[in-house]
Image (cartoon, rainbow, N blue to C red; front, side):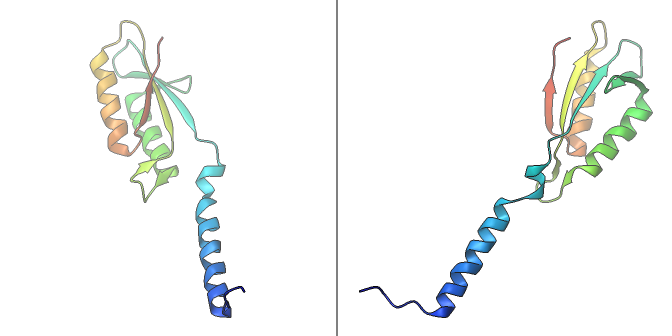
Length: 115
């Protein structure tokens, strides 16, 4: 009435099921995605990173560390959302340069926010 199932077939099925379940439970999916805000200020070389005023050199280091800490090797990107803002009167070319820098670091989930 029912087809005969061998033990090795059951073991193979159980192993496949285990691999599927383990693959669906990626540890990255359980952690919230970090969101950072970077604002380009009017003054040359002046930025705001998560509300704190920083220099270009400090911002470069913060972004590099952020990309390293949240890197996804298989994807070639970092699991981070970067919200970019430009203060009124700031040079927008600095914002586009910042976008290029983020993409180069693997921070490719960029949102441009209004002021």
